[in-house]
Image 1 (cartoon, rainbow, N blue to C red):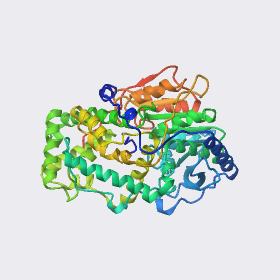
Image 2 (image 1 turned 120 degrees about the vertical axis):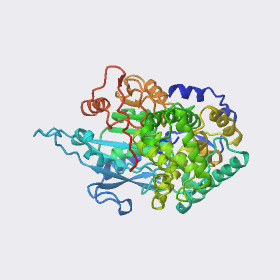
Image 3 (image 1 turned 90 degrees about the vertical axis):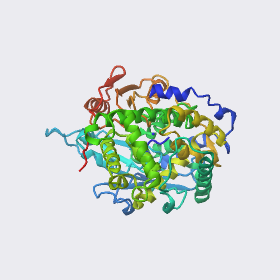
Image 4 (image 1 turned 180 degrees about the vertical axis):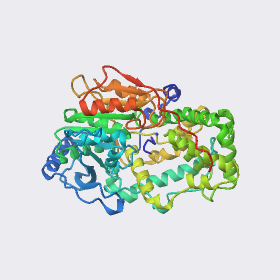
Length: 531
């Protein structure tokens, strides 16, 4: 599920598919369930981390982090069932609470401990997160909390994973057929199988230990290393999923939790069905983008109806198939650039401007926007490897391509924009040989977990809105705040003052609305005319 790196109506279309694969076809490898050994291992690791503490100093030079950040490392077991075995180090970053009232008052702001953040992925790093305290919307939180980020296991520099030579990671130009031929499908299936094999060969038996349950356990060890009696945590996108696992595994260790843009935690949807629902949701988001571009036809000249905008996009895709922009941007790279626009409204003006320029004879903006950047290859390959390992290890997947082909051929008839790209991203899981975890059935009873805050945008495609409703049902006492008629992925700390008011009231005062609440949408983006 491409969340750091992916609504309701469209999700229901995907959910109506007869997806019998996960029950009819056993996953490759052995399905395992967490047990007493892992629980003991977490307790041992947390006790050790609490005794050792976290020594903060200069951050790793290779990560090119600003000098204001301080970093340290926390040792965690590779395998929690064997806490005395191999250990790996997770890199943690921090900026201390300022203690200063951003309103200018002279009174000191009491420190409330550490606020630990994960931005999602799987495969995204949170090491830069503490710098967000410089943004005006975050200053009140930065006054009260030490802002703490970290690189999860597998994400550089925390025992980084790799599945292929980074020099081979960026492939382009490539086609992006909405109705791929049998030959194209065979080619991509062979690539997926080779990629899965590369993950196993480059990492060995350790590969099985990179999954969401261990990410939740690592979070408990980080809490202990920070010296926090209870955890204050904020997870976005995929961070909401293993944050929910933490709430299930360690409810008594929770102080406050914020779930922003929620992955559906239903065990039956992790991860195959979630990806189908995501592809369906992106189709509606693609229509939102085309509608916005059409409303600004005077700026972009791409058509004054969504259909005409789609025709302009398809014309550009056809031209790129014959003459790639900059020699590197073909139809697949164009699709990838507009897929990113499905995540964030602020990308809309620049995508529209680049497409407009290309169709008027200037390929440079599109080549710069959508082309590969070799200097980013190592980080991108690492992120992809972690994403693949975590999702493939987390749950059963269909192991026959025929199942993927059947389900996604059906879905692509009504949601062609992202469907096949999502298949190619996740298809290595069909050929995965490491053991699969059994997804936890997250449920907390009244009083078992402190009240938590759930945030969601109603038209989010990366994590469709149904996921927030599902988590709200599963965590007793939780409250959902919805940004209505909006689709930007990740709503906390952005331009919506209503959302930020609920966030601050909760994190600073422990105060939640008496019932689920909603906020008006953020303003639509302003068009960016050509230079």
